[in-house]
Length: 450
Image (cartoon, rainbow, N blue to C red):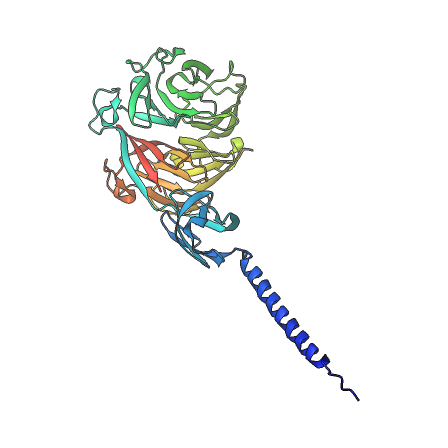
């Protein structure tokens, strides 16, 4: 009888070993493949969520890597400097004038949007741009402190960043370049006289008081003594827009009349708003001039202190006008020591101020002393030349009033914020970079905010 060798169990063992080895090999391959796949980048939060320039902000998340070259951070679309990167943390520095907006990070080309960061201004540095406190025989042109100014009222900025000054003394229109070079566009040696249209170097004004510039580059100037609103085209040609003989008459440009027009502003649609009135007549009004030249009374009437609709409202002496980003007219009611607002539909309300004095605070808790020039930045912060307090005040959109610059004593001292000294600031304007320019007696000064 022959014997048959059984190899089946041995074959099963070999097959089992083969299968286990194969599975282990596939598991290793799969694991390696997963390790090679890019891991998703996440952003879980930032700290702090508000601050000024140069604040160090920590961005938390995952899978950032550790290569600085692969990471970019933006605050409100302004690129920031990245200080360090680990797999779950980025440290970055808030850039100057980033303003409030969303955080954005790019990691190896992957874009993530984070929470909003609130930018806070921390500095307000005062310098003297042109003119000098000694004064002299104005107007005298020149660079910076070599220029001489007389009494100045209105101020505006043109599209090239030049400052245009209305100087009642010798009926002058002055220009200051961003570099501080001063020139005279128009002047009249005699203090009073007839208005003359024509090229600006030949045109004549009579006690010009304020100026506004529209989006097309046209200048509008209140020629107070002649009860006129004058227009200067971008080519430098002066014409009379409306007005002439004194009176309160609404209507077409050829019929309308004003009484001592003073403050002026213009909105994005080309509507012009002018304050006019006289304490002798017990009147204080805001008049509106449409682009077609039609004049109407927008708000106000008899002198007083009353909020309300249109001509039911009452104002004191009006020191300045500005337009905010919603088309509201912001009024510096110097006579009532208040800052008022007129909606596009003519409703008048009080933003801040209550009585003569000096106090920071919210709304009617704040106090001003003859608030004069006024301007609004692109974030709807309002800036006021608080004349008799010799300070520049800032009103946030929620109505909170703070003192931006100006110490207790009057003077011409440049410096930081409350260390700088001012003397009776009058007109004020702000540019798109939040720089402020204001007139003070014989000088034009600048506030740089950061």
